[in-house]
Length: 404
Image (cartoon, rainbow, N blue to C red; front, side):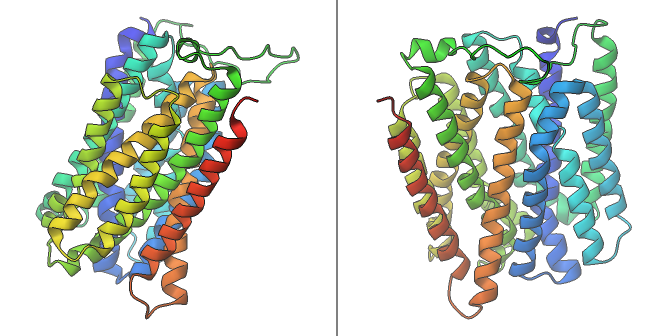
């Protein structure tokens, strides 16, 4: 059986991964706040640690999948994630929960780059555009569902569900991985050697059909790939600052965990809408203005989420926030897959960049709150300033990446 016939099952595994990771990482902070009295500083620090670990391991996870094949990578990832979460059920201290988070993040690095590569392999330009779109819709929809219903699940099943529910899902994924491996014809899916492995030099990577269709040179295609790799981590700087502070937003507006799940998941569905639009309409490919406008929207909407005086304004800000994040993420993943045949390696780079953003945003917010504890909206202004630094970097890369 070929990869293409199994891709619907790959997408099921991906959707389960998105729901499990989304539920754990979003509602973990409610658990840490209630059970261990974590403050905003400590929640942000926990998110920063997870982001740093993921950034340091995601590139390796992608390369591991490229060399050893997807089945070993997925089995390693799901085993580490599930077993660490089960340990979290029995650990009754904040330090123990941090260890669970670290091991879980290490396990996750073997999953996302591999899944990205699996759904993208063996596709021509049209097929790649379709599969990247479907991939984004599946994980974004599943993540949005996890955040939306997660608050109700958290109230119904208790804080322990933060651990046992995702662990159970990872067990199902592990079973599916073994089943997929058996279904696959022997020798059909060999490990793919990474770029540079072996003694013979590799020929220059060709410009993709998509780039050729857009009359884009190799230099420009690589430039867009690198600009997207810069912009997407800054989107995750914003995301990873918002998520640990959702308990604070819930407290400010008097929301229960269930209500917070309803009102604070709007941006996830806006991101899903952006994915649908960019899947069906492809003229944004290799247009810098589209990337720039999304980044400007990211900066403005992030600040508005925390500075808005009313809940309805927070909801509106989330619509623009989710749309901007959708554009930046889609750009990063598409250019990563479109500009190189080494899809697992480049998927790892894409995920590592996400990890850097997941680290930098909460770290900056935590440092600002620690340094200026009495100032209003300290973390918001600090992270907004960091996002503006990214804007300067994006403009600089655009200027220096143009063909002369």
